[in-house]
Image (cartoon, rainbow, N blue to C red; front, side):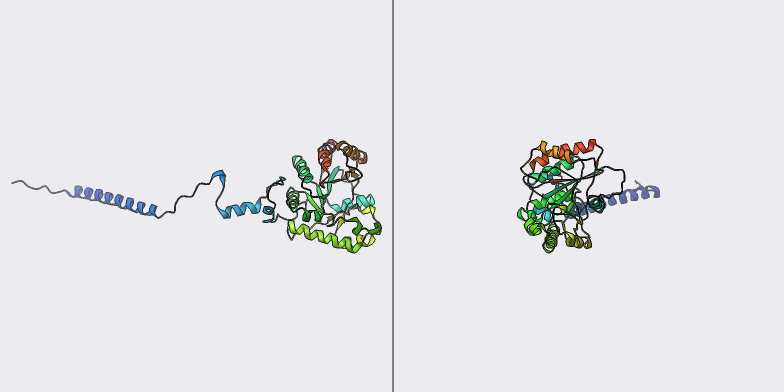
Length: 312
């Protein structure tokens, strides 16, 4: 009679371990399939490196502003988000230059500094050319803004933001720039002048944000040109304003339009080797030759050892 074989205890344990391992593998596989079925669909791939995360995009916009002097962009995009305030805060103290220009008094620091200043803008044709030249030379300038230009040509508001974001200083050149109202019979109308100045401040704030403030101003035509300035000077000083004239110029706003070479010649004629040189120029609509002459003026100043600063 055939006798059945009994599994030895050792073989029985081995069989049990193998069976348990097989069952565990089957269970884990089933569980993995179920988990994958619960996952969200894969992210959509967007071309041109566009990030579809709105929070990420917002954070980038908050910390980066691209300098763009191309006026073809829609200016409304620049008004969606106000730029940070107080650009130019590391510029040169304008009160020192005011004392120098008014009283020929300055503490010599041994540095030759040129302040490029532009009045009456921004303009759609000339200002972008000037900004391009400044940017190519890593130079900052001071722009004295006429507010009514921003209202007459809304596209120019983008240019004001470009000026500011490029690190230039923004000065107040009154809203109207109307000498008949500002200086009737060549006498300063203090009430109208202050009101016009403040109206321009509000216009600048409408573009650069409510926290924007500039203390640097320039009288249309220059402070020295007009009579009876004592009262307005007192008010301006009390309110913390610094008014600035110039000690060199291209004469681009005097008489008939001038050629590029005529502007350069006039600059060289008024240049006397001043340690602190404030150059009057204009970036209004008809000043294309000013934009053309600017690279030569910058190169000449560089060759003479000048640094470039903003007035703040």
